[in-house]
Image (cartoon, rainbow, N blue to C red):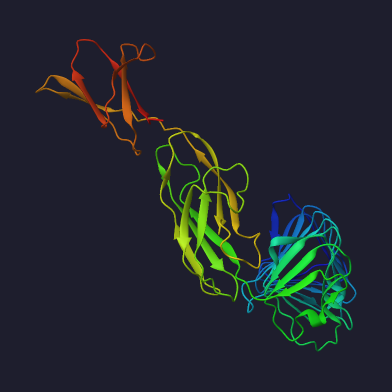
Length: 411
């Protein structure tokens, strides 16, 4: 709940400054994120200055949070910078809006925008202007975003980069501001595929597309990974890992065709559609905007090493989706560690049989144990037994012996 003159973030690229309350900067000074992350969370930042997101800088806006920009001021996402607006459903959007008048929103060459369930309004020339050489996230490519209240006789969204972009279920409300276009493309590169758009101002009738590179298509489902569960990223060989994937049909179109989810336990590169997974599970159907979770069988391994783990939804390509680039999860590194040492066994004399017995505990299931002994505590050990159980017996000797026990897994 502070009033700042301006704000500059110069942190490590993965470190963040997060708002715990609203922040107001109304002295026309700039907000600059040079390096690191400025995360508004669900709060708002009001500013009358320009906003600059520079190389390795990220500006994040979460559900119910918003950024207010003043008349004729600009938010510039420069090369290497990222603007991220991720809401939670249409009723809890992340918002880019105005303080007064109409501001400029420019995604410059090399900059990136990532948006889903976001609201964009009161933009000046170009609307949300994705310039040539800039990038739109392939995972959060304006899905379920609302564009409204643009400047007179201009566009709400201009996409002039060379990507093929899929936008699922955007909203263009009734044109009360007398704008000319909903979406515009002014150069003959790239393709924009818009699926199941709603609102009176949606559709090809209101587009600005001289080169026929904007396509308005019917509703298609959109599978996304919403979460995962992995019980252990550093398992010991001989133990098991358990994997769960949570997914969602993030569209108004139900899925009535069965599809498979595959896991790839050790792939150096991202698996492509059509590649055979190590394990799979089948989902028979998934209703509109519904979620499900799938458990995979226990996976074990007897060899130390590092796995690169992936999950791919619909790896057979059975479902035609609005966005095909957001079905992957990974990579996740899993480090299989060697078996830990066994704690010193308990030695008991069995008088009735004139033997000694070694007993030990061990938390893992192994192929066998190896028992060594020596008359010297530090050297000269020789193998005297390979029990599969957690004990060993032998006749009492007149000699003084030291014992060592190790665990072993068959390859």
